[in-house]
Amino acid sequence: MTQRIATVIRLRPEKEAEYRELHAAVWPEVLATLKRAKMSNYSIFLRDGLLFSYLEYDGDDYAADSALIAADPDTQRWWKLTDPCQQPVESAADGEWWAPTEEVFHLD
Image (cartoon, rainbow, N blue to C red; front, side):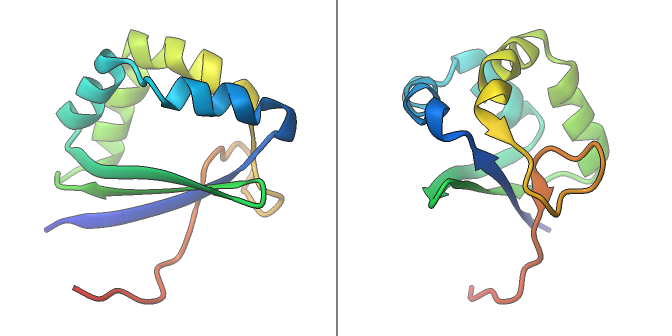
């Protein structure tokens, strides 16, 4: 069964142009790792300084597949570029980067 996952983080205003430029040409290795981890239909939206991400996960162990992504050297290099552009929202838990959101409606 497909799991829909949405998260939010703040975009540092002075980093918006850099963030847009990075995502205009996401590295193929990073995209391949996401697909290997059973992630699809991944989008990031921007509004009023907030980045909202949405993806669909088609695996059986989201934690394990997320760990696969985090262990990938290319993804780690990618995050070294994108992380300075971001700042957790005020309501994020300690150590939480992209904060999960709650689905309140869905139409198939």
